[in-house]
Image (cartoon, rainbow, N blue to C red):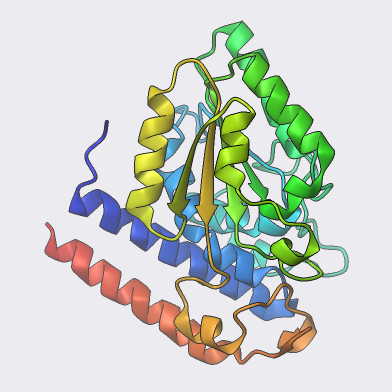
Length: 291
């Protein structure tokens, strides 16, 4: 088990803050899934900057499958920090003629599958995990999906497949934010208790605060120690976690439209932008003090 040192946690908090900055920067142009991207930056920072092992060739030994197209903005936000995309490129997301899609297709830089056809990513991740095990590659596969995707029957078929083949190299992360396009997940079709259901389907499961980096790191530590079954991390997140002014303004927002128009009202970008820049400055100062 790795040590959750102050430096490790503070470094990941800074990566997460930078990812939040990138998400907001992208979405200030013409909209995007800002709420999910901001909320998942803690999980995303742990995946990209701690858990996945570099391959020494500018990418990663392990594999990350993002099933939910709404959440792929965190991939872009992290890859901007890694130099895979420039922010100039990402600011064109959703523009006519732009190669940057809000729900990327297979073959786009840094993406394993076509995201956005909800409910299909887990099946592909499980197949990849089985293939890597058969090859003896030692690669681990991380799959992120939304709690809303648990409404899809194909997801549960994939869970049964993963458990049957004892895919201990597969980690499923469920973004458990109780939010769907048409309302609260619990109102549309309740999915709880998710942890108990994942355990019943043959997973080792753990429910955590997905906006607390030490919790995410502890879950990944536990996942690596599991040898005979796949692992499910149920990450409870809150839309816009990490930028308080946005949470207070629209805590249930799903999609930002052109000029900041939301289905639920209007969002002034400037206060949140200032808050995240101040957060980055504070974290940089705190990290420097640890030297």
